[in-house]
Length: 92
Image (cartoon, rainbow, N blue to C red; front, side, top):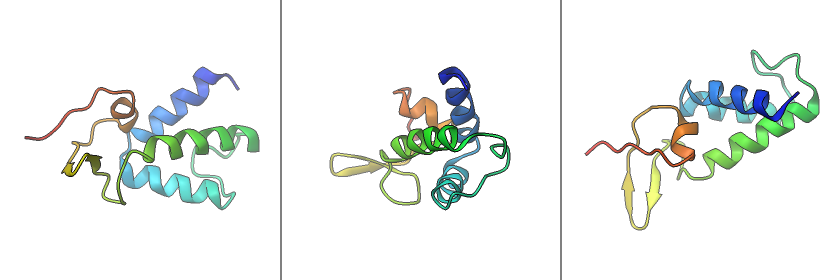
């Protein structure tokens, strides 16, 4: 599978929100196949797991808030992948 296809799947997963991304990560860590990823090879699933884990590493805790220095900022639920790439939107 191409890198572009992996990125597209990651973006699709991220568009469903933080809770969904965390569920997919847990399933992939358990070597289960989340819905929509059943036909992927183990290598492809591992690539998606690594990418999702990298994206979620910017969040502090399961509430999907970002840490910026000492103040915590709540991010609105636009695609996490877009936030990860730097197009962050804040609720003021």
